[in-house]
Amino acid sequence: MRESETENTKASEIASRIREARKLLGYSYADLGKLAQISKSTLQRYEKGAIQEISIIKLFDIAKALQVSVHYLIGLSMDPDINELWAKPIIKAYAKAIKPIQKVFFAPL
Image (cartoon, rainbow, N blue to C red; front, side, top):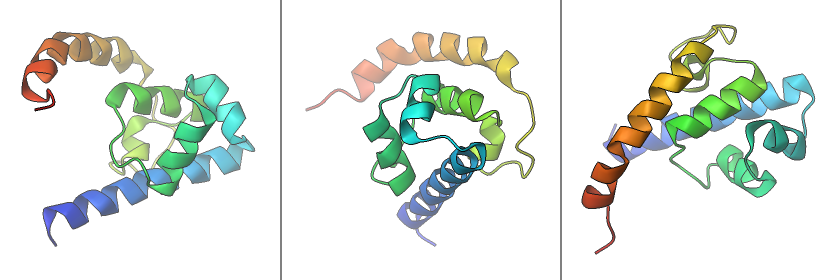
């Protein structure tokens, strides 16, 4: 399997798990969007696979709103009930630390 196929499969798995957890809780896109502080249209694009990359911060926000772990959303765990909320401050600090690096390496040409 090529790398792009693997990435598409992973994105599809994440999208499917978000959709399943949202529906299980009876949340609309608007409900989840309000809890995760993400627009309804962005959530729809995540679930449909139109957005292939979701930031780790957004994954934590979605997982928290859906009451599941990030490990579950990304397919590293079959157990949606693992509590990972302790890690969010660490991830936020990491994201803040690499932001200047991202601007250098991922700046548009």
